[in-house]
Length: 156
Image (cartoon, rainbow, N blue to C red; front, top):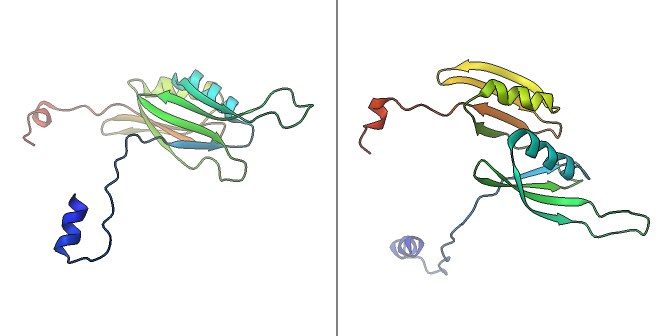
């Protein structure tokens, strides 16, 4: 409707676009060919992700034992994340921020599972930790922002 109003106000004579509503945002993590299963296992172990769906490549050759996992949907911190196997795309291109009450423990758990610690630093709101997982993705751990009483009473 807003687009129609703008078009009418501008004297537009072209067709008006229909408004589009998005119902979900699903970040997609692209990993190396045949590594989706490994990535899913890592995200389950380190972040407590829950697998909610998966797609398999069908058997391609008679000697191939099982089809491999091509993509998986994970629930992670209340968000759906898609992990996909795309062999011709650039991998590890989307940093993610995860809030946690224990940044140091999150970094230690990720490193113990194979991630590389990039940095850990003190910030105004607490500690921030950053790791790169075995699949090339950067994960930033931060403590939830704490609201002061003044901030909580501000008028909006």
